[in-house]
Length: 306
Image (cartoon, rainbow, N blue to C red; front, side):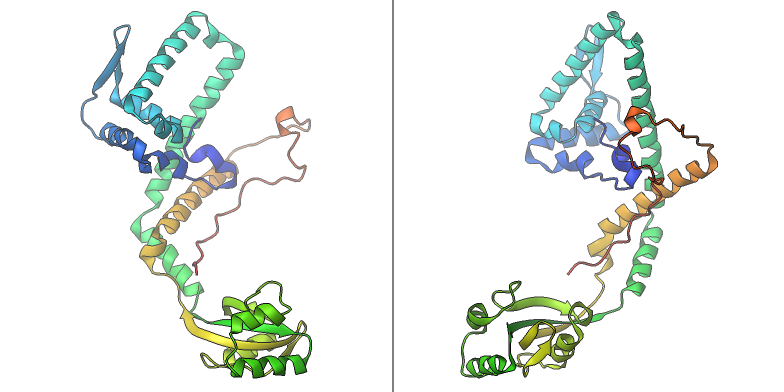
């Protein structure tokens, strides 16, 4: 049930939101405070005792983090304390029954131990990599690669012939509502009211873009022929789309830097290791494509949003 970065490490899509989401839920305020207290260097607080052995706030905080959103649903610190108590009692009974010596259980325990220490290391690597300087460099590189782009906000009416387009222009000049007329006569199924939103020149066919970007705000075009038919275009607004400010994308950049550092580290270990895969696929590998490649893809740099 681990919620650490190793959850999706193979695809380098590690998402820390699940780990932390319960802190943002109103029912989890006590748990959030508990986690914060456990992270501090203060001495541990005893919350309960089981057969004389203490259950500390740090142990309960670790359990809450492990449970993730389920801890938020619990709604109170005491329910997580009860979970820790029950876990301790049942695990003690399981050891007395020597289930910890069962080969299958031992394998799973070893795998879980590997996952925990892997997550701890990857978390540390990500934290060390996500410096302000590193994040600023990613931002600056992305900003340089994304120059300001002119965009227009426009709407259109598409009809089969030039004569029909001219009639549309006449009706609009007489004051008819553009959206209502588009809904009545336009053959474009993707924009019933004619609204195309914001777009750059490369998003439309050349003839359409040339006409749209040549128009002033609020002006109608003459009939414009494209492969789809005849268009009447009205430009509603124009703007220069610029790269977003650093603070608005800082969280995306931090996640990218962390993921990239973790992915690079894993690939470095792979390159230094001697890895042998047997010809005979095991059942767990049967569903994988024969030509599957190692997870060496790098996370994509954050893209600006409209």
